[in-house]
Image 1 (tube, rainbow, N blue to C red):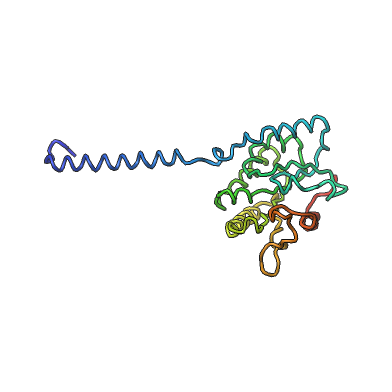
Image 2 (image 1 turned 180 degrees about the vertical axis):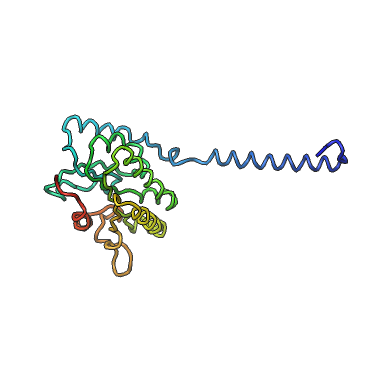
Length: 240
């Protein structure tokens, strides 16, 4: 279009509309750039001292090679896996409050060096409670699996389903959706197992059974872990 041939009023209108459109594009771009990412909100660097603590412990008392590795958030950290699974060599590398992406970020430091024969993974409820959509949470778990299998291609991974609880009842539908998506993903590989702990933890009213939780109605008590032990034990690989 030859702008010189347009009448002045049409030219002015065209320039005004162009300016408005360009301003809108700039505004949208700025809004996207200003939106905080998961790393901005929950930087993995906040766990550096915890990971260094694990590494220090490994130097002082090296774990048995080819153990079963438990990794994830506080439900792992608070689990006395050594007492729960006698006769099995196990390693607990849970860090409370963590998201799935945090475990992924430290795969090279607290997964690969152990050369585990099996991985038990629990995380995701912190993700959902932080506003991460179920599909994104599922994709974060896929990223964890892919990073592990890049270095340890034959290691089976058990994903323990998100436990719904009264403390986070407002996001129960999102947690249910996330469990469904992760279960579908696990069904795509013989190396992945989805362990549903949520269904057995519900009562006749289909709500979480309060007697399985501590007073905070978020973390498991002794009875809650006893149920998990019962459900998980048949899936654990025996000592070589």
